[in-house]
Length: 207
Ligand SMILES: Nc1ncnc2c1ncn2[C@@H]1O[C@H](COP(=O)(O)OP(=O)(O)OP(=O)(O)O)[C@@H](O)[C@H]1O
Image (tube, rainbow, N blue to C red):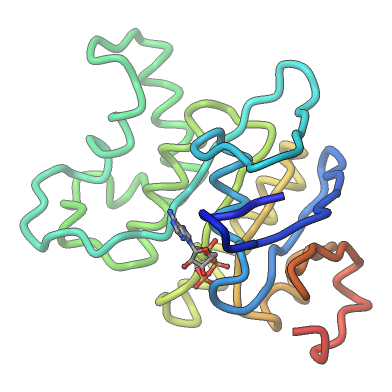
């Protein structure tokens, strides 16, 4: 259960994400999606209840790309490297190169983040998160404010990570079409609780 002061946000929330599953986290504005993610990331305590991850699971979080200042000085590569020790071994450098290639950023690694497009920035955030080799990746509104081509590119990349590395995906979105195309399961906040189902069975009336 989650309350902010006396205001109930959600109650009786119970779900399991299987390894390798892809799940869209749906619900209207203000129903509790970001709050649930914060609880799962340990950034916020739930008012009551608990949850468990499988032993040794690594969780990564990709925020919605923020409007970075146009003169933000770091290159894409330097930005991704923020998630690495300052002094990098040969192995670390090879890992960064591998991740940049996997997220289609090798060619533009020297482009400044401030000058990069929304899709390129979002892939840089994803690349940064991938350096931890996560088992579960949580993406908060990752495709919001991206153009249709950048959306598809990001979703194809997420699909690839899921299929190639069996990464479990939890993806917050308002875009039902995109969720139907790329996610297998859904979780939706409805009447202050959470409903779990298969995306193929999702009916728009549920929102
Ligand atoms: N720290 C806080 N203190 C008080 N109320 C909060 C706090 N954080 C969130 N809320 C409220 O809790 C509710 C759920 O917020 P949350 O951000 O989780 O919604 P959401 O489903 O992610 O919405 P959106 O789709 O707009 O991002 C909202 O009504 C919000 O105003």
